[in-house]
Length: 148
Image 1 (cartoon, rainbow, N blue to C red):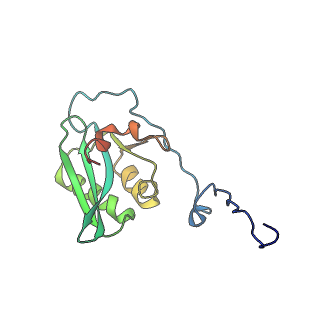
Image 2 (image 1 turned 45 degrees about the horizontal axis):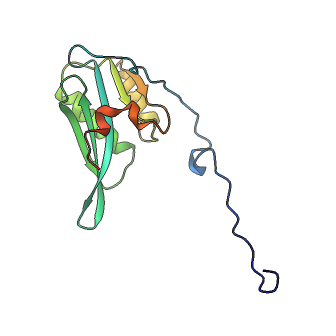
């Protein structure tokens, strides 16, 4: 290695956050519905988004589902997965129904943890529930909705 000036590959350390998120305050919401079974509609709404390969590009679909009725209450399509994607689905669901849910459950993605999304949920009096980091089984209502 010395003769040919070869050096071993060095792995970079992992950042605790993405560089652009380092100045963002950490908000942690616990999983409020871990041992919860709703007995009527509009108690728990779950939300997630997926990507769809369309004409060689990806588009993103966000949905809001009532976990009791399994009805999709709101949806939004976008070319990027940004906070506007999930906020559009939430606004669609809130506009479609007169009753507000008691809980809003999602993963801990930056789209759901955005200040605007949290502000909308709190202004509606909705309790925020989030799955633990890297735990998709804590949101099976949405994960089973989108086939792989």
